[in-house]
Image 1: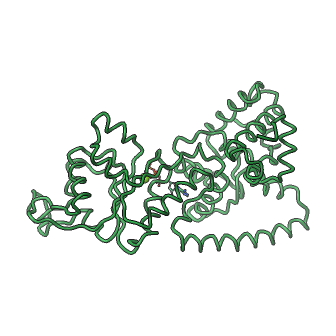
Image 2: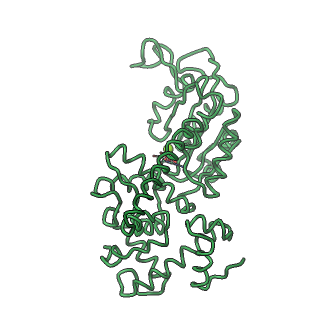
Image 3: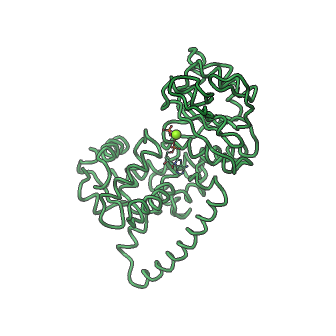
Length: 379
Ligand SMILES: Nc1ncnc2c1ncn2[C@@H]1O[C@H](COP(=O)(O)OP(=O)(O)OP(=O)(O)O)[C@@H](O)[C@H]1O
Ligand SMILES: [Mg+2]
């Protein structure tokens, strides 16, 4: 567990985005007033931000790290046309969010957005689900027949999620739809033209699956027209404060809470953790914490213990000290600050101005810290 000394003496200066925590504790009355008017300005900005989101579907995609920015820019371009899009990325990185934004930003936005989760539909039902069936096609079929998802998505977009789980037999049929733009319902004899944009997503390595014969090469190359790779959260930790902020606002509405931030030590732990479940995991951790916390801030004890284990071992390695629970807390914090500086500089492509902005400290403050840690301030 987190030692009490750490909870009481957080390295607040390191993550200035969370400096509200320090301000609340240390500021006098005048400053509180200043803080309140700042907050009102902040609320104005928030409303503006919400309006932006309504206008621009890509505004839902939070993050300004290079990886997510590149993915968002490519998605924006993809939204302008009708080419097939393939979204790649680990579980929980936001493939579903990207697919919807591409649909909503394109000329088909007023048409339907139909999602098929290829991993969730049983193989025996997948064909009728995708292509529909005619009257009496099989026992239990509706008298009137039923249009499939491709037909339902006509004029709009079909999103084939987890396409790596689609059985080979159906892959051939999907390929035919893509190439000929027609479908044939089960038990039917006529071809029905479909005007549907296709977006597919997977967390599997389709290229490898093609090599092992688990995925059809011809379908893969048809899908691989605009391929957007969404980076995992561990590769874009600089987006963490922004993501936490955005998720807290969203979750406060669901949980009927008014939490405004996280304790700096919690932010430390989030930045050290490897996030195998990506943004979905972050959202879940925050939702859990909102249900536990009493105040307006998420405290270290509100997040699962796995975060502290990671932080403990990370500090132990970085500082060569006796670890998180050892006596060398100051040394651990210094080592951790150094690790953050190095990581941020790397993420900022060694651009000091950008690194200072990411850390929300002044450039001169950054130089001072670099000198303190003996990190070269050039190159
Ligand atoms: N860039 C983003 N900004 C804000 N929220 C996001 C972003 N990306 C994902 N989310 C949120 O994270 C959660 C997971 O996203 P999503 O379901 O799209 O992931 P996924 O890649 O489709 O995962 P899976 O492969 O498991 O289906 C959702 O609740 C979504 O709202
Ligand atoms: Mg998904």
